[in-house]
Structure formats: C-alpha cells, structure tokens
Image 1: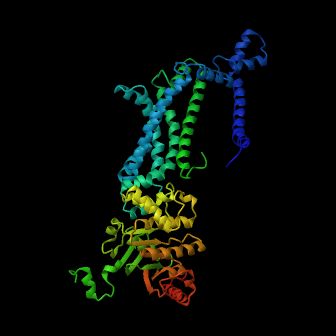
Image 2: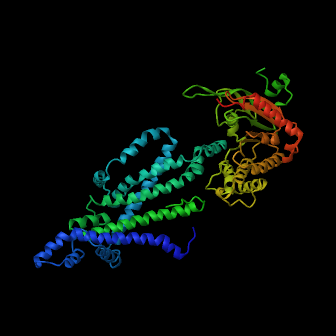
Image 3: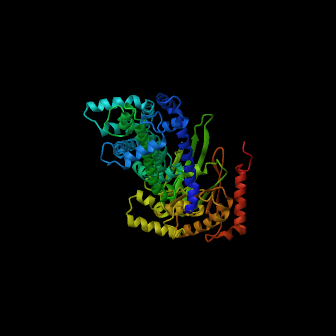
Length: 299
Length: 280
C-alpha cells in the first residue's frame, strides 16, 4: 500500500506514539506507588507532615528506587550511551557490543546446526526417529539450570569468554531453526517432487534446487525467533560467570549494588538490541523474498 | 519364441505394426492398493500398445485409474502385476534415460524462479551448459507463445500462461514422449480452447508421441488419434476408438459430423463402462 508522509504519520507513528505515551504515564504512576513507602518514611524524619507533592516528587528522584521513573532511565541511558566513549567500561554501547558478538556467534552456530540437523532428519528416517525426541527434550531443560554447567565444563577445557556464552545461545536457538527447516524442507508439494523424479534428479539436486529454496520463507520465520532467544541465551550466559562485560554483567552488578536505574537501562538496551537484530533479519528477508515476489505480507 | 528378438517375435505373431514403432507396450497390467478395509483394484487387465507419433487420450470418470496408468508409464507408481515397456525398456530405465516429459495438472513451476529459469531447470539437472540451456529455454518459450515473459515470475502470469511455461519446460529437453495429466483441467473453457489449438500446432511441429489424460469429451475428440475409454472399480479399459478425424484440425473441426459421431461413440463407450451411473 502506497502512502504519503502524512499517511505514514497517521498509520504507523500515531499508534506507536499513543502506546508509548500510555506506558510512560502508567510508569510514573507505578513509580509513585512503589517508591512511596521509602520516600514518605525518609521525609517523615525531616518534618512532621511532609506535603504530598514533595513525596510524589521524591518518588521520581530517588538514588535507588524500587522502580525508577522513565526520565531517570532515559538520563542514565543517554549518559552511558551518548556521553561515554564506546570503548570505556562504563559505556552501555560497549557492553551491548560484547553481548551482541556472543549473540551473533551463537546465532550463526545455532542456525548452521539447526539447518544441518533438519537436512539429516528430512533425508534419513533413522535420524527422524532417533534425533527428534532428543531435540525436543533438550529444550525442556531450563536454560538457567544448564547454563552454569556449560560454563564450568567449557571452562575446564580452557574455553572462557565469548565461546561458552555463544554455546548457550546456540543451544537455545538451533531448536526453532531445526523445527522450521524440517517443515520447510518438506514443504514442496508432491507434484514438484515428482517433477524432479521425472528428470531423474539426484537427492543432492533435489535438496539444492527444490527443498532448500522452498524452505527459505520457513527459515526466515525461524531465524527471527532464533536471534531473539540467542540474545536471551547470551545474557543468561553472562550471569553465572560473573562476567566483567556484557549486558548480563551489567544486570548482575546493578543488582549487587541495588542500582535499579542501571538495571533498567541495561534492560532497555537489551530490548533495543533485540529489536535491531530481529528487524535486520526481517530486512534481509524482504530483500531475499521480495525479489521473487514471495515477501510475507506481515512482519 | 522367448528366444527371438522382439522384431522377429512380432513378425511371428503377425502383428501389423512394426515393433520398432511401439513406444509403449502395456501387458496384463494390474495394480492393487492395500487399504485398511479391503484391497482396491486401481487397474485391472490393462493391455495397450502406443505407436510413435500417436496422440492417445485416456478418458474416463474420476477413479478409473487413467492418471495412475500414466504414472506407471512414468515410473512414478509401481504396478502389482503385468509388464510395461517404454521404448523397449522398463519404465524405470526409461525414466533414468529421461525419455519423457511430464506435464502435471498444475503448472508446478517453482515460484522462486522466473519463467526462463523454470524452463532451464531440467537442463540444469541434466548438466547442460549455461549458454545452451538459456538458448533452449528461449526457443521453447517462443514456441509456446511466451516470448517477452522470460523474466516474469510465475505469480505474475495467468493460469494458462503458467501451464504453457510448463509445456515449454517439458518440450525443451526434447523427449520423444509427452505425458500430459489433465494439463488444462484447471483452466476456463476459453483458455482451454486456445491451449488445445496450441497443443495441436505444437504436436504437428514436433511430431511427439503424446499420452493425454482428460475427462473432457470435447478435448478427447479434438486432440486424439486414438481414444482409450476407461471405467472405474476396477479401473479397466472399456474400449479403444481410432479417430477418423483428419490430421489437420482446428476448433471448428469439433462441429463436423465426423467429430459429432466420434463424441457420440465416446459417450456410448463411457455409458457401457457405467460411467454415468450414480456412485455407490
């Protein structure tokens, strides 16, 4: 659908802006409610009957609030993103970069593993029967329980830093790719397969010229899910190691010192990073599928 | 007699046609599907010989096994009894030699390839050089009237044009035998008429042997040199009619008394096979 800039404002921007405004408003109200007890207690020590307006103002200005107000998070975010050198340890961009590199490595490994597993499962009945239950079982184990084990085991063989985090990401994100790709590789209809048989095509030719191209729309749908949980995996991987860098480390140190503002700005950075990653995949998808008129209508 | 080579054996039997001209030879063919309730006889006692250059139509009601018979000839289905030879060898060997082009009920184009690349597909698989397959694709797209649509994707073409592209794809690697499974069944009648005319022209130009599955009496009359009438439960051949229509035909030929007479005979044959009875 073609639309002018004004149409874009009304159709795209307005709904988003409305939702953001409502959330921010509720957030301020919630901050007052959650921080009220602490602030009123502190102010009561100073004067007998603190005015309500002073308490409300105080709930939005606390050093270590239960729930920081949006402008506090925005200030911290802007300070650590825009006013700090990106190479500095206090820069949120630096930490996001550390997490992003683990995410992307884990995502790449997981995507390759998922695709390879799917190809095996589609071609060999034995693998279909033997692997599928294990693949499903692997995802029923809580990642928080298994992540420290992976870190410890890999640490023992001398792998620290980026690789163990990526392995945890991979462990999470190969699953949607494998499931999506099995479906995608099986998506050609019988006629398209019969056509290949009538040409006496080899299994490899059927894979390259029919099954893989047919699975591309399925692949992108899976990759969007995979990259998002790959990010979760990388952050979770940073928690049990006491890692010194990364968004997970930022969350951990924030919780040690009660720095809720720091935690929230790290969370926003994680959400932002996740959005960038998912939309990047969506962009590549549109470029790939758009060229052949197969673009999925909705994102 | 088993020791005699085919040609002499045929002479021995006093067959009029030369065996070298027999493209398809189906003898005592049967196919039984095992289903949970009871075995279903999809095909029974099928005997049929098809000569080079013939246009043979299989016609019959749904479930008479006409598509199944063609799929057996194409080695896409296996019979449970009897023998089939294609060009003197088994259907399997014939498929390995890429002896036939198969045209399906739907165009079965690959949506991620443009029309040119779709027609090049069989050549890619057969290892034809890039220049040669591009040239062949262009030539056959021209033949089916799709010149100028090479770069279009299937979704940009009408159903009729898509099916033409699929015909170009089947013709382009020059198989002697074309197997067409209700290729125009999904098209509207006007498009179907045009496609029938084009097919007649292509058949005259290329001199292929064609097996054509349909349930349209009109189509069978217009196109065929021979019409095989089949009936269901069990799938069997009721009658084989030689067409006495002239070789040169067009859509108006259907209106001629000879064609009317032929259509009437087909209807009688279908009736004899209980094709018009209420399905039990």
